[in-house]
Image (cartoon, rainbow, N blue to C red; front, side):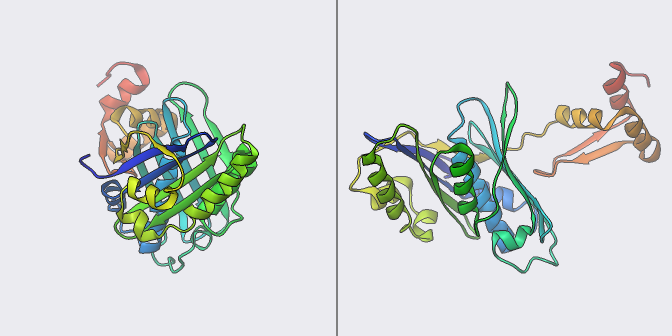
Length: 284
């Protein structure tokens, strides 16, 4: 695979426990290079991107899953998104003069975190993620336990060069035998080192951790950075702003110029574009 960025699902035979593994390098760098992120913010964004990919394995339809947070700390906004076909994008907005902390809670401060699932067809769903645990993995585990009633464990890692993660999930219909397996698997997974996750392939990592179990691996999938912005979507955003405000900007500036916050693609709209947007035909 060209990018080297991979996602892979797996399950434990004869049980109700499944899992997913992901490692990001090029896509992580592509996203991380969009802004001069401090190391702590870059790592938090990396863990969030990994988490979004892992959680996307639960989607049963075409669409996207995003993890979003707003707070009053040095990082005011955090967003990581993954589509059903493993395209990711993400962003963090931060005060470069205030970033002195390392932990998730200190960086975000008081605020809200949510998981948003957006089907290509159908209604959007949003669930609030509790912020009571010290790290992102703990917060997400808490969310799945409380909101979804599906025991789920996350192991998230990131450094300056890459990010990686492992997710274990216990599906409904388990038995007492699964109780023992679930506890054993979580104990084994908790022994994984950051260096292993960030440098080794999935088969090596899973064999080291679970070599005494019967693990079925599904085909690996490539993960890549791709922004979903377009000229059409940007026009839709202008339409939502409203006719009067768009014409006020045109009168003041001569054109409307917008940059995508995720990939910095530049879009420029003149009066003809705005006339066509609001009347369906060009007036000038």
